[in-house]
Image (cartoon, rainbow, N blue to C red; front, side, top):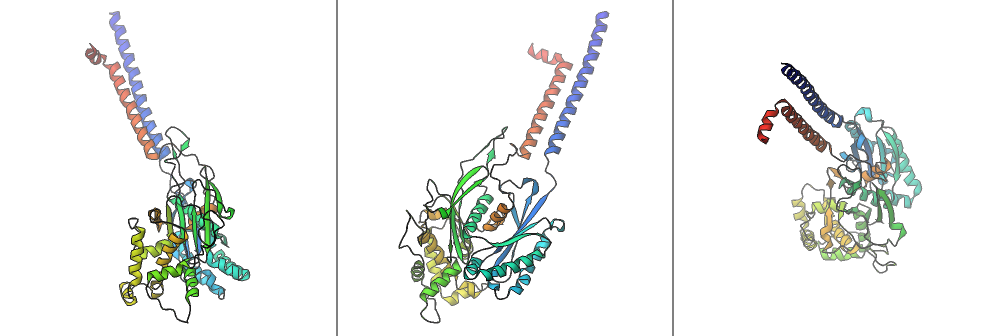
Length: 469
């Protein structure tokens, strides 16, 4: 009788203990899930904006960028949300009518007011960078260039944004910021992090892209040479970005943008007051080659005009006028060989003018009349100027946008001025949010299953003992 009583007490206590343990396990699982989901869910959008005006030689464009404030040191998080092309020529053309600059900038600045929430106007930085058109004006008259910039600054200061100044950037800066932009957007600076470790490692030792920029008044070539000393110190830049060192070659050829190159060619060709194009690709090509002086080179290898150029390395992104001209001519496909591009250019140039006007009725004649020259010039610059070959041509990628952002120097310029590119790699969580939540759920289910099995083992052990016997 006493044994029966003692057995009943043990059974009663065991059931209560197991019930408490089971209930505690369920509460623990629920808490584990709740913490994992709430602590790691995406935070409410907390974004920042930045504005950059690209004051080029032929026109001005305004770009608005946006990024999550809590991730501003991550690569690829900044993206373009708006582009506004200012109606009219470049700011250097306003040298005799500076009082019109304010009106000239109005439409795009008002557009920025609309795109960016009013609550963030005062904390949104505005930068204006002027390129080769203003460099040429400054060479002609520093006083006139300063007068234009002063009026630009006064005009932009009237808006409710955080205006950070207007300046003429150097050709070297233009090349470097273009290189930073495309590699930032392509994710070439990023590193992956191992699971359960805070030590980053590089994937595939990925190489950066070179950058080929073509504007109206200048052209830039920028890339990281492989195992090659940059023999000309003026063409060397050192960057430490996200924990890695880059030795970058860059050069800007002033007056070798497509518009200035055309003026150079016309100045060489002019014999009378009217020049009539004859649509002969080969003659145009030969005439363009005269712009490149290759008669001397004080280094082991040169581009032209005695400028050092290391052997080309890796893939190149060709943007700005490189892209727009070749896109119009339908020559941006990577499947089209250099020989095929040359052949197609010959056919385009040979088309009768009246036929071309009919085929491209929506294009202004001024621009339409220049595409034969511009396309031929691009081929000449890349092949004879920069020494690309039929084999290396396939490494040129004509790029307009990368993930919705224009390829160009403006994004790199803003990233630099807002200190969003750290020298060292920022620490990041080893797992993504989705992976973390998946593992939390998986391990919680495992815990829950083990707890249930444990309850069954202790509550009805006879089932398990029968199997074992």
